[in-house]
Structure formats: structure tokens, C-alpha cells
Amino acid sequence: MGRRGGPSEIPDRDRLPERAEGPVDAAVIGAGLIGLSIAWRLARAGLAVAVIERGRAGDGASLAATGMLAAAAEHEPGGEALSPLCLESQRLWHRFRDELEAESGLTIDYRREGTLVIALGRDEVERLRFRHELQRRDHLAVEWLSGPAVRAREPGLRPTVTAGLFCPDDHQVDPARVMAALRLAFRAAGGRLIEETAVTALTREAGRVTGIETTAGTVRAGTVVLASGAWAGEGNLVPDLALPVRPLKGQSMALQMTPRSGSLSHVVWTEQVHMAPKGDGSLIVGATVEETGFDPHLTAGGVFALLEGARRALPGVEEMRVSGVWSGFRPTSDDDAPILGEALPGLVLAAGHHRNGYLLAPVTAEAVSTLILRGETLPVAAPFGLSRFARVSGVPA
Image 1 (tube, one colour):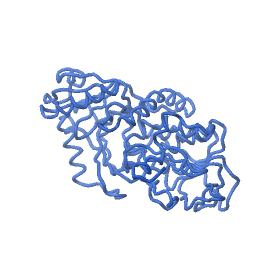
Image 2 (cartoon, rainbow, N blue to C red):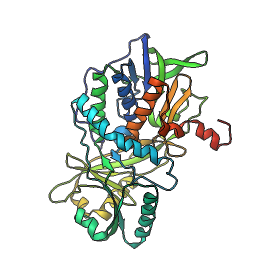
Image 3 (cartoon, helix red, strand yellow):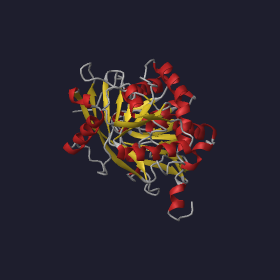
Image 4 (tube, helix red, strand yellow):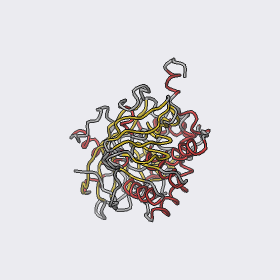
């Protein structure tokens, strides 16, 4: 079964001509969430922008994702350096949403009920307390709840829920709606979206990246942005960089909530799964974490883990119809944090967002557009350049 589809399709997609055409200010490789967010920001600033996508816009992790904006719930040991970037992006999301909806004419199902992280049984309570202390130490908005207080907010959860954390600022969006809105807003700003066209090489002159070679011709560009998600680390475009980005497979499913089955109003996390209710009545359950390369196949074990993890917390899932099952590839760097900034003269990176693509889209677009438009690095993005991996390996940056 396929993934949930978008609410609209955009006709008359632009295609590159058979031969090279005039230069653009920026060529963005990849029409996923990150690539389109950056391209939209650049186009609305007045730049001539082309986005080149090997398949269809959003076909990778962008439509496979759940759409959580979970700076607190996602916070883990070792994530202290990433937290300021996440919190800044969470702050930027409100303006990002307002402008995206206004310029596209679409709503993105932005939901602000907050997120619950729950413990089932005594063994999980101590681990939840550890998480709570970590969140409080890093000044994240979070509230400890007793089991009865959790079930008062979500009566459909099992009585074995013994404690929970409420993260009021961890909101969510509908990925299909966001991607449809980005396509419309980008093109309304004058951008060109070129789908089903592969980028085969970068063009370089005197040590500077000056454009791209594609299966439909050459495009000269003042700046090239590499935002191709899990494919950014394949190495065929920039083998001299050896980008530390790999695919991390995740299987997810959509269930249909009904009056008989009951429903959720908050995003709910357990130690096994997360469950996100959407405005169309669906409940997204995700996601497995699998080091399988680019193997897209659904597996019985993956589907079982999702259903069992959801049923363990929410017995009503047994009554819900399965409306979709899919897989996607998280673009994961070696330290699970994004890679942002100029890698070579004329080449800017926006890759490796791991599980935080939706959360980090606004700050990524802000950081990359600021770099291209003004030649400045946002202080909050400065720690996330490619050079940090050279320092870790002992090679001078």
C-alpha cells in the first residue's frame, strides 16, 4: 500500500529544454522539503531560481515523514549542541506557516495541541524521568504528568500509562499539505520546478562550482545548493567531499480513526512508536529505524512493530482501518545533525537533517538564503558546517 497522497496536484510542470538555457542565480538540487523551502525563500527575495528533482517533488523523506515539530520530544543525550538550532527553527515556524499559507492559498494543518511522551509500566518511568531532567537542564518547555493526568488528556490510552511528559511547544503539520503549498508558493514567486530530471555532474571553472549538468541540458548558476536528502552522500556529484550522509530507512502507516475506535488529539510518543492525529481523521504511526541502505521494501516485521507498538498504548487501533503503509529514507549524517553552509566556492550544502527535517526547515531556509543573499552565516547555524567532521577525525579543517 502506498503512502498518503497530497491534497492537490500541480499541473504543467516545467522541464529543462534539450539544450542549456540562460543562467540562474541559484540552482537547487532536490525538490524535497528542504530544497523547496530554500528555493522559495530565494525566489521571493527576487532571485532567479531553478529546482531540479530526479523524481517528483517530495517523493523522498518529505512525504514519508510524520510532520512533527518536536524540539523537546526529540531531545536526546548528546543533542545539546543541536538544541539551539531546533528552538530557533521552532520559533520561526509561525512566520513560515503564515507566509506559506498566504502565498500558496493552502492550509497546512498546523496543529498546536502539543506532544505527550508517555511511560507504560514502572520500568519506563525511570527512563522518562531521565529524559525529563535532560529537557529541564537544557531549558526546554516540558511538564511532568502523572498517569491519571495523561489519561485525562487522552482517555483512549491504556490504564497502564503510568506517567508522561507534556511538551506544549511541540506542534505538527501535515507533510502532504506542506509540500503542496511549497510547490505553489515557489512557483508563484517565479521559481522553476523541473521534475524527472537527474543531475549528472557539477560544472566547475577555476576551482568554483558554476552550474550543473543534467539529463536535459546544462544550467549555469551563481550558486548551487545541494539539498538532495539521503542521496546527498552518494558521492557521484562531489566525490572530493565524501559527505557523511546515509539513508536511514523508516516504515510508517496511516490508520483511520472512527467514533468506534476512539481517537487521539495530541501527538503521542512511546518508547516504540509515535502516533500523530491529522485533520483528515487519520492517525500516522511511525517509524522504524533500519540501516538497510536504499531498500524501499515493506516488511512484515516492520509493520508488526508499528501495530504492536501502537496497540500497546492505544487499544483502539484494533478497530482502525489501515489506509496506507510506506517507507522512506531519513537523510542522516554521522552525528545526526544537519550539514549547512558553503562546502566549495559556489556550492552550498543543506543535508543530513535526520528525523528533524520538518522542524528545521525554516531555520535551514533562513540560514542558506542569508548566506547566498548577504554572504553571512547565521550564528545559530555556524556549528553545523562540513568542517566539523574533519575536526572530529583529526584532519585539520
